[in-house]
View (tube, each protein chain N blue to C red):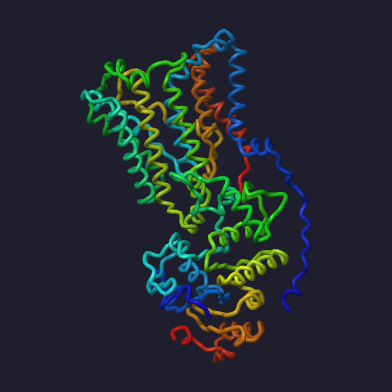
Length: 264
Length: 339
């Protein structure tokens, strides 16, 4: 594997006495697609919110390219090359496509005045790049006028601008049609082909299995399993693992290695 | 294979949005200010028909232009505050307080320009206090700014014992010439206020600050997730409101060359009405500076217009309310809210 892009060391997040995530080791290397799966309440969302800087871990360390990050927040996460496509897409629906793509990262000239022409050209290029073009909407269209898939396109366009090293996608295929899902898959493959990494979170195990090379299975706030695609073998076996986690009577991990792997 | 098990979904999207042409786009993106302009034109037409002898001659317009600059300085920044999802009821006291600093500096014999600078700094500092109170202490801006309005006005009254400060010497100074004279029969303040409105409009539509104000008002969670410092943006809108209030305070003091302890009091409801008559919705995320300016024009005109049209002063409040309600109904029909 390539360079270690981001690493979470013994990361925990608690709300009062309740641990949403308790002491997790987790990493993403350059150029890999990692699938993060687990039941509702397993801690996936908390984990990626800590990655994206939306929430601060209660304890533990975040390392970006081997260096410890301090004062981790959303702006720093983005500056470090991590883009997150949130489940609700984190769009401002009354604003234009341009304004959403450049939200928090406006292209400005002297004194903070917007460089509107450049923003528009860049937005057009991005929308074309990921195949979300249409005669019925322009970069000036209001996001609230768009369909779910089109809105997803805006969120994806925002994520690939700036050539982020890691794109975190929180359930990107939920509530999308088949063709729209295929577009998301094509997007992930294109990102992977350009040597960048994707962290793919999903409930549909088949989707996650198809697209990812390595899997991290979370269960009740901990990493229950880390395994490569070869070690798992098939989506059906991954589902079997999930089922055994849900009904824990002697967990046998098919081909994988348990908790210890990450710490090594 | 899982994929083949899902039902094949063929989406045939009807072309519901017609291809855009330039004119249509301009009209579409400026629905609110254009609607407000229409209200204004209709209102003036009615006034002209009712009383042509008054409304086809200049003096009535000149009298409106005396108070309009003050209103414009308040309405433009208030659009920012409403768009970011807050409200400010403390600007009348901020206006009085900043103008007080101006009056004190001038009364002490110092340069009026120094006085203006002091007023602007005072206004921005008070705005920052109000913003910090609302944002940092997480108070409802409706109530917190109401409290601040009473408190600041109270401070003024306690300190001055209700006495005004005459500044008649201002008349012969450079500042007096710049801000109190007439140019082509129009009060000079009109041009300064228009310049401020244009600046505010550019800030709103062509600057990072305006873009973030709209984003925060639209969806503060999304903005925060994208690395926008939501608290800072909210506080800065209150600072900008303080700047506008200070400017309004200086202007209103320079109309009569006297500072009154009540300076600013009469502008609270007209300024707020102007923002909404102008087409800025109450829910945040979108707003219009041009609409707000035309809204201020409408609200300023009602008062002089009703009386000049031959109705007694008792009708003013009724027609004030009627115009506000009709304008709101018009905008409700005109604007779409996206979620």
